[in-house]
Amino acid sequence: MSSRRVVFVVGSGRSGTSTMAGTLRTLGLHVPQPEVAADSTNPKGFGEPQWVVDLHTELLARSNVQVSDARPRAWLDAGRLSGDHATRERVTAWLESQLGEADELVVKDPRAAWFLGLWRACADRCDATSSYITMLRPVTEVVGSKKKYYDQRQGDVTRTAAWVNMMLHTERATRGEQRRFVRYADLLADWTQPVFAIGEAFDLHAVKTAMANDIAQVHKFIDPSLRRVTLTWDDVQVPTVLRELAQETWTMLDGLADEGGDTAQAQQVSDQLRVAYGEMYADAEAFAHSTTVAQRRTAAAEARRQAEAGAADATARRAADRVPHSVRAMVPESARRGLRKALRRER
Image (cartoon, rainbow, N blue to C red; front, side):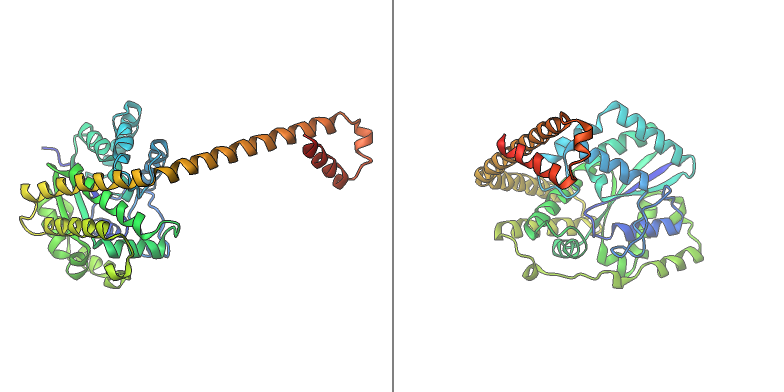
């Protein structure tokens, strides 16, 4: 059997994915270089290969999908690119080059969940075994952390819905594969328990043969104080029906992290929740249809206004160009601007 391993750390952003990736890196797994630079939102580092982040950003733009997208159909839009031949060739070539550096890689990026089919196919082409670690953190803490550190234009409702959408489909996309679910709280409390269990389950040489110095470095790396946001449902304002579905989703996922918790029954519950969420979202879209149509009309009217303004500017410039250069040079720029404005008004 091939000794090549690619461990994908997935799950919603702000769920401890960076801490897990950094832990595996410290124990000897290779994070492809260069990495995304640490910043104030993640002072210990992201553990994200810059090439992977750039790739996913490009693919999401091509799919018209956001990183935190609440739409169930967004999975279909992103999935179409996973079967694109040119994209697979490109990812396979990059992955092969990284496996030339080390046999055991860790690839982490919250955007990766949208393209797990792509990565699995490319890992197979490279004769590498794919494994998945899904990090779990209560939805209220994820929403609160994103509210504190990320774009403020998204509200609690959108973030909660996006979390449900992301986590339910991540569970479905990794089903039947080598996988483990790890609570962020458990990782902070005693990282050795979940990480060494993963090392055995995934047959990771670097983890199973970690030296005392490596283990000591992980103890220094993991900082429980980084769990800086601990909100509850009292702090997150969402409709009752969404709160109840999100809480049921969390309860199901939390059970998957237990020993022997990843059962067919739990997966059946996940399927039921995914269907329920899809129906809920469809109802919300139906209610908001009039608003959507109105926004499209407003956008179309604004586009027409800008096009007409651009045409008027072009006419004014052509009219000004017909004035001999020697005459234009004698007229102050402020007067020329006034002439162009007058021509636009007449138009």
